[in-house]
Length: 115
Image (tube, rainbow, N blue to C red; front, side, top):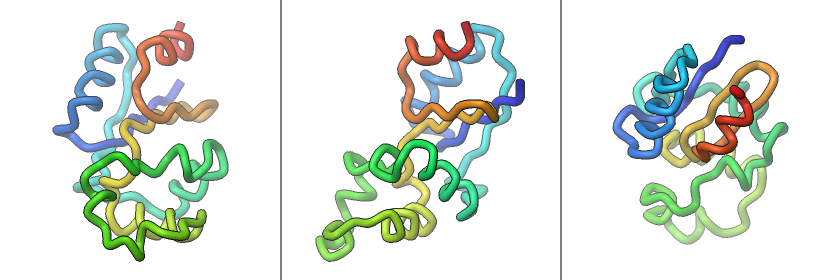
């Protein structure tokens, strides 16, 4: 199984997720979308799988600092545009296995996914 974890290197939640994967012997590739960016095809596919509401990190500083006009009237198209412009608005981590997509880190969800 090919596993890729997407996020930002210095994020605390990312560190916990990567430590869990390392501790359970799960091999993975890491994609830092703060430095490498993220393409629209990935975001669109993720949105179709989990919904933009799940993917957009509204609790983060980057989103909260947006002007009110950008935060109001959010739609799928607008959310994707915001996440493309500022990938730190994507909830972390996003774990992609080809068969499933996990957004955020919950040890029990990882345990279920990797048994």
